[in-house]
Amino acid sequence: MHILLTGAAGFIGSHVARILLDRGDTVVGLDNLNAYYDPQLKRDRLARLTDDAGFRFVQADVENRSAIPALFAAEKFDRVVHLAAQAGVRHSLVDPHAYIDSNIVGFMNILEGCRHHGVQHLVYASSSSVYGGNTAMPFSEHHGVDHPVSLYAASKKANELMAHTYSHLFNLPTTGLRFFTVYGPWGRPDMALFLFTRAILAGEPIQVFNHGKMVRDFTYIDDIAAGVVHTLDRPPQPDASYDKAAADTASSWAPYRVFNIGNHDPVPLMDFIAAIERHTGKTAQKVLMDIQPGDVPATYADVSALEAWTGFKPATSIDDGVGRFVAWYRDYFRV
Image (cartoon, rainbow, N blue to C red; front, top):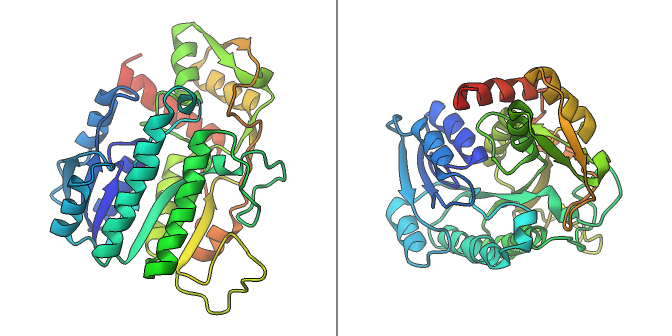
């Protein structure tokens, strides 16, 4: 297939691209290489892809209302994986307009491109953050997600609503994936594993929010990337038997689905830190902090629906995953 992959220089995007290329798809990877974190890391991820004849990189913003339509018109993509977004719950308190530009306007451009150029399936990144104030565990796609606690979460909820509209009006098959705390080699420097590993190896203190009373459904990158590709290969179909009176938010009469994609094995933050300590051989200096605005104390994914739909089943333990990250970090930064 000929696939558009946005966010190709990103953490998840670069891993998804590698799987698609290895199986023989051609990939146009789009990214703006912005400075939200060190662009050199993004360029280094791309360098692992650009030697492949099936890959072509395009540098552009998804919110660009001339570049994105022109790209769709020229390339005639079969399917689209849309991972480009302004990420980060905490950063949305500092620069909210970036989330509207990238996550709302940018997604609108992707939907329009898919609509007008016969794309067979759009898979896009949602987030576990959409569960917001929900405390029922594990989080299920059948739960309501109407109480976001950050603008980032609200933008991802908006993406799901926008996608449903296009599935309904234009019969565009769309699938949203609610990612749960992805970690692993080539990860994002603003996320806990990267921050903790850097500080521990440097002998610096780490900030532990909510006094360590956090639980996360940490999900290893290889499992996530495989799940994205499995999902791409199974476009949703219209469901004439859908009961509109039941109002199940996980599916629709339209060719629309939304799934959790996580590890289904929540880990206390202090246990996660202990795994980093084991693999670095150093003890962390912990500074206990209050929970930050926009954060939630716990996440826990029910992934049974995605497993039934695609066969997705995470297979990487926290200890193995953290060990692989620490080994990559030491090699990449020569520490």
